[in-house]
Image (cartoon, rainbow, N blue to C red; front, side, top):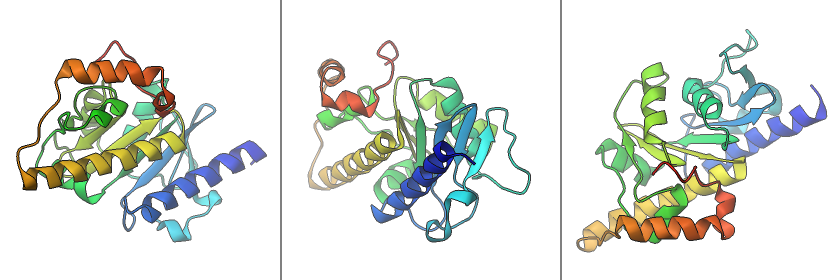
Length: 223
């Protein structure tokens, strides 16, 4: 293992631990991947982050092959498929944060109740239909929900955030959970006011020339 790979593996471990530290994940349910050379590096299956080290991170080729003695996250398919099909993304995080998952359990998309939704690429955050975890069907549904977006919910499951780096993917995950929490509280107070598609699309354009473009907004032609 060369220095570049060691650094990349350490980054995956740090990101996985950050999901726990920021309250986005608990136990062994979350997973993290980063693009690396001809494939990706991904967290292993079923290993708590406090016990995870760089050597535990699994190197996975885009054809799905990996070192036989290691077992990648059960969700390796959508990590692989997102990174293989979306060149603008360099990292993917998946977790089960409380508010994101609550809306996912209800099968509800998140509308444009705050202008920060534009950081996700468009006027809503879609919720992909349910499919069993780890399946090709779930991966296909996730890819469809991510068209023109960098985040999505997974029905009865959790959320996905993808960015050009691990730092950006984690930032998006935090922003999505924050928005879901705000939306949940607003619904308890009254009827949330939803901004128009035109208002959000204008904000998306503004974000592309602002510092938030560092979040890695999706391609503009697919809304």
